[in-house]
Figure 1: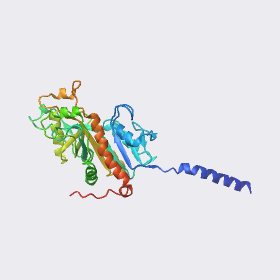
Figure 2 (figure 1 turned 90 degrees about the horizontal axis):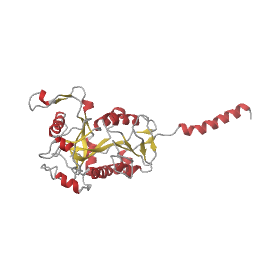
Figure 3 (figure 1 turned 120 degrees about the vertical axis):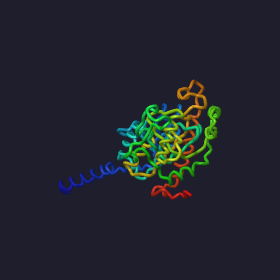
Amino acid sequence: MSQQFKLYFALLALTSAIQPVLAVEPVKVKILIAAQFEIGAYSGDRAGELQYWYERYLKGAPATEIPGAENPLFCSEIGICGVELGMGKVRSSSSMTAILLDTRFDFSQTYFVITGVGGTPPGAGTIAAVFWADWLIDYDLGHRWAPDEGAQGAPAFSPRKGYESIRQIKLNPNLVAWAYHLSKGIPLKDSASAKTYRNRYQQVQARRTPFVGVGAHLAADTFFHGPGLSAEAQYITDLYGAGTYVITEMEGVAVAYVIRKILASDRILSLRSAVNFDQGSAGETTLAHLDPEPGNTPGGFDVGLQNNVAVGSTVVDYIVSHWLQWQKQIPEFDLN
């Protein structure tokens, strides 16, 4: 055999050895669970928003560092991934952008579950209740002025025209209907302290035991609080024709906007558990409620997180177990 042919076969063998490395397929992600903050470790200590999800689906899964993301991405062998994005619209949306642009992962058929905790108005929810979002709304984007600088009793906010796709996102009604249908009967946990706390309130909804509901989630970089700002939140929701404001949070609309912008995806769910009321009870000042004395807290944080996963995992498990059907399209649900 001539030297020329020997060199040819040597190069062919080398190319064959390298080719599998170059042809590594990206990880196909079925579900991405996007929480916002953690308190300590991802397992074994006081839980933040990701820990119970991590312990259910991701324990032992490899951590992949994503350039530009706040925290690593964990992915299980069956295609369920989870990440702590970071609190607030800026950190959460920039993290999601970095993750979706990482070519090591394929998000073309992914279902996204944006998840965490928030506050609820006492007329709409109760401690440890869990709400799927039908609308995600930006509380901040618009014009706002001091109430005493306008007409007495008039709203102190108006939306800025031209930002409709950024300030409000209606989630896929078919997917939201599926999520609520699959999870509405899930038994939810409660706590003795939460039971005592909610009885301070006169509103019927506030005094209920935890339940699964659907409503608008409002994201604000400000921890807005008190009956006045709660009423403003509902006013904004009314302006946008988005039904009932049920949860105040800090990330949803920004994260969903990134997903839609990059992927044009309609496979987005947002799930929040109510761990406090957005205002005090009768006779309680807003500042006293915002900064409670020791032993004077709602007592629903941990059970709210557990309820969140109990509700959300029902939907995650269903989609994964019916993946051959759900990977192609969201099955039609009879909304009537």
